[in-house]
Image (cartoon, rainbow, N blue to C red; front, side, top):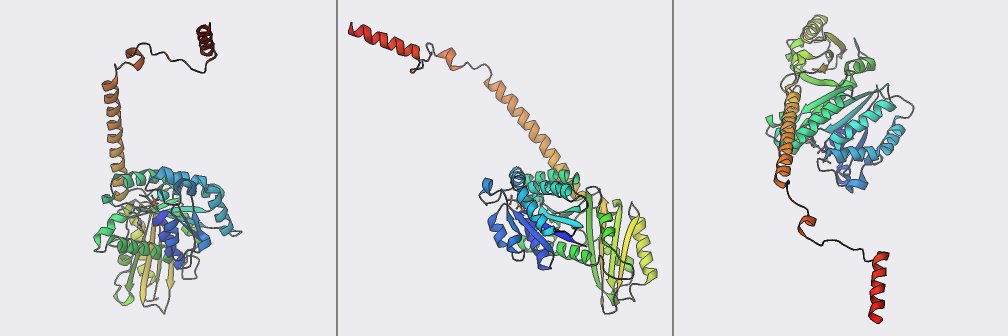
Length: 384
Ligand SMILES: Nc1nc2c(ncn2[C@@H]2O[C@H](COP(=O)(O)OP(=O)(O)OP(=O)(O)O)[C@@H](O)[C@H]2O)c(=O)[nH]1
């Protein structure tokens, strides 16, 4: 199983930086030189500054048109770098990490996703994006809604993390960002770590790709960990992986088409009866009724760890709220624009031009040959 993590923009490269810390192959792409320098773990030769000719290396200030243009202009450089990283061994999944509300990530990610799909048709492109906080105002919400629309037509799955859930803690915002970034990386890394690993019933890269190849719908990764001696019901632990801290996305898990469950822990907890009860429960709960599973009994373990992935989700309150708000805003903005145009033409219609009011306003070109001729004749007359 080979994954390449590509971070785009500030939020995306910060997340990629954490993936680099846990030894994933990463690439960081940004319009801001300062943000690239700030990274700690992505190797220097894996940091690409794009759009320098338009931004001077200073970011795009939440303008996705500039983010898109920056990625378009430097796409050959970015793709060349990716080619050199990929080499001769296929990449199973490109994970693109970014913030939906900014300019570089929101504008640039769909451009890169499209190019990757074209160049690597057998690899999956999965977008992992942070949804903006309501308090950030209307622009990030619009950026998010339009980017969701674009990516839903290109990416195989979109793993959206709702930053609004951050507010449930007491941390200041940068600590809260750190916490959520860490959680995302922990979950995806735990999931990938259990793919292609020997176990009782194992998951391979093709299982994971099957689940994530979900025509641009939403996917979510759940996680739960508990002391083995305290686990009364494995199915409850699996369900718990989607609750509380669970999702970071307000989604109806029953609408999911596919699922994947990986459980790691001491053999006495991973009993066949409990496992099948848990799987039956989940299979009946989700709409698509297809669950892949992997079980990894480990006698040295004292804890049980559950990683769950659900995909093919269309029903999400977090996403609906963003799309609805953006649509309502767009509608009222277009209406206001139309009214302003009508008002402007009503106010200004009927005004004359300067010519109507200033008689004798003909203008002669002093360098015209005819005028020269007249001037010459006048001068001659003066001498005669
Ligand atoms: N989860 C999470 N969200 C973040 C983080 N940093 C920023 N965001 C969110 O991402 C959005 C802003 O995206 P950025 O990545 O900062 O912007 P950008 O893509 O670099 O684009 P510009 O700054 O406009 O050049 C906002 O909606 C923030 O709430 C982070 O570290 N973690």
